[in-house]
Amino acid sequence: MLLIHCPWCGPRNEDEFSYGGEAHIVRPAAPEAESDAQWADYLFMRTNRKGLNLERWVHTHGCGRWFNVARDTVTHRIEAVYGMGEAPPVQSRGGG
Amino acid sequence: MPASEYLRQSALAALGLAAKAGAGPARGAGVILRECAPRAQLCLRGGPGADFEKAVEGVLGVRPPLESGMSARNGDRTLLWLGPDEWLAVLPDERSEEVLSRLRDALAPLHVAVVDVSHSRAVVELSGAHARSVLQKGCHLDLHPSRFRAGSVAQSKFARCHVLLHQTDDAPAYDLYIQRSFARYLWSWLEDAAAEFGVTVEV
Ligand SMILES: [Zn+2]
Image (tube, rainbow over all chains, first blue to last red; front, side, top):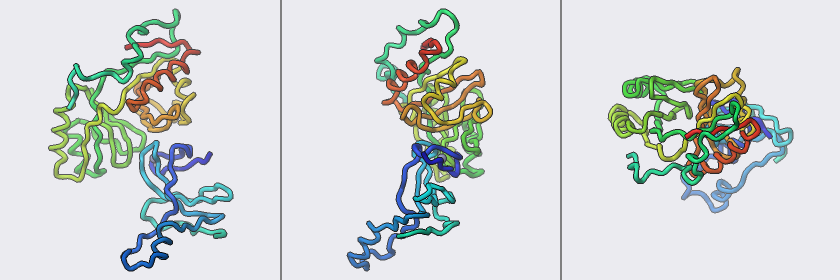
């Protein structure tokens, strides 16, 4: 089980958290101007790297807050935890 | 608004706890389980910030604790930290309406939410020399006195349910705030987990 450091509650077991998908996906400013392919890309396509991924997590069974996590999907190592809206302190890396 | 006595029913009513009360081991029980009387539970969202904290303190006489996992108490009013902008105010049942309206008035100019959630959770008190051992069977939080003591608060998973845990005494004693529909399951779980230490039920 992962030990995730909630920015407010400190280290807690993974089963208190829910995964919220890839972080930093930006909704197109003018959806009506997007092609179907671009819109589908925004809605469905994710990087899913074999390596360091930037992810959203929420402390469901704790303080209920959302935050971002930089997690390596090969080693399970968490390299950074940072707030919503903050720039990632590390860059994602690894095979697409 | 609190339900009338006629309409209100304990979440544990079907367990017939009154009939079990007092029964237990002849020598001192290691664990004492008690269903707490209904209490007013008001969820406060807002702040943090001086305006919000002062307004809350003006009504309750308690300043919202800003440190995560902490509580603050003044007489019969307690504020439990739930999140960086969220607290649970706990006070005597009969004062809920009066305090709710005073909080809403005092906080009206601010961006806040004040919601009466008294009926959402049952409260069970777990005390006795082995209370912590029972809790540790169902919960991975570190409850050692060096990390968790009287006044500490945590929300976590307990026996697979979401529970708000508040240590009320170093003796130790804990209040477990349990979502109403899980109350019967969790009470039975606690009785079973406590059996090896000798358990007494109080109502
Ligand atoms: Zn948290």
